[in-house]
Length: 138
Image 1: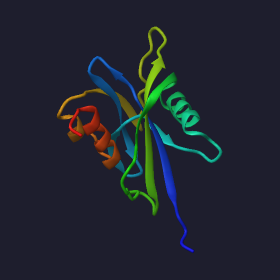
Image 2: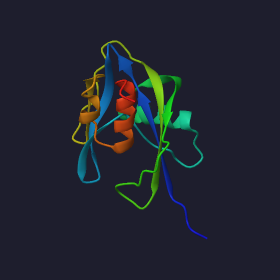
Image 3: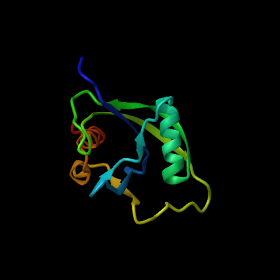
Image 4: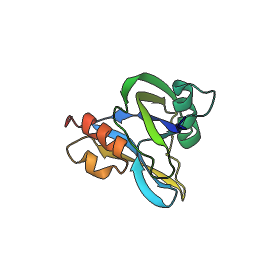
């Protein structure tokens, strides 16, 4: 029997004024621009995961509006011998007055215009597919 290793990732897409929130961060040894979110933990559902990830990364509670996309092609992990499955949700954060995005040495948050250039500003293959979908290119 072959061992199967899957890495399930869950991401939130916050769209506002023609832009989408992205995260510029270090992933192991490389710098990437990706959508906010992260890995599903054992015993956790995908909605709990995205809410936890946004609280950990941004300090924001979110409302999950709808499912946007789940990986429909094979993607090998760049960091370990596993297959990546990514799930994306449209989200709306509850942003308190005076809120400022966290900034540290590991990650910075930025707004990117949702246009034809968006896919070229994103690093990870599945996120690039989602960027193309957001930009109406797929």
